[in-house]
Length: 121
Image (cartoon, rainbow, N blue to C red; front, side):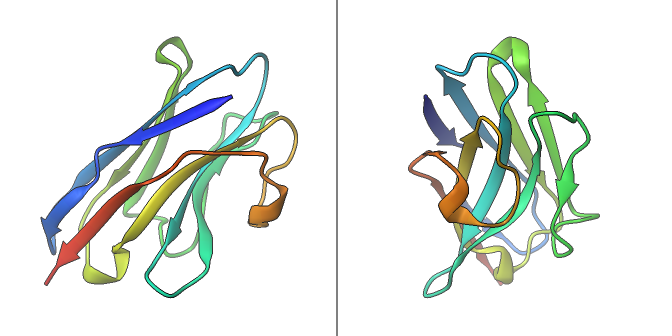
């Protein structure tokens, strides 16, 4: 399984940005999710869908501003982010796992390298 993120960049507060994560090697249902790691902080769950449900789940800080989507035909998941603020700055990584879905990063088997998002005030 390989995951490759794209779409990061430097934006200003209030801007929008859409991240993409193209995956390969996934056969059958898989949980997929986006995580963010701010400088000096732990990586934390942003949004994703479990292997057995198409309904996106969001962290409280992401709900209402971020939209998770998945295009199986393109083997890509997306994270659209609105009204960005400096606290959204960080390395955004996508993760996949055949069964696990949740915030415990050690339980996710596959990770991309991440794409950096920097929001200036």
